[in-house]
Image (cartoon, rainbow, N blue to C red; front, top):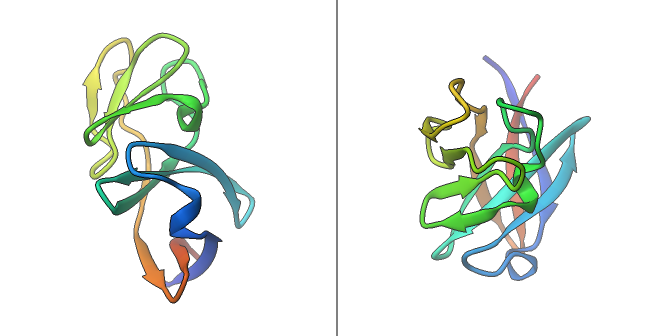
Length: 105
């Protein structure tokens, strides 16, 4: 599957232990910084559509601010109910002073 890389933020804009909502290719994503590693996931919780980028990071887990569902930002796997469906994840890389996210073409 072809993909395109889109610059979404600077690493300094997303401190360790935080997430930031970004727009890329018509998608709303949450970019998370876990100890200097960046992960991108869909910004909507699969339980109730809550904004994951406004949630709290606990290590590699992001918690939805609405009902507390948790997901692994590395894999998208559900870690805590009430969600039962995983979230979509996207590859990231650092190019110069930008975080880039890979989106499918």
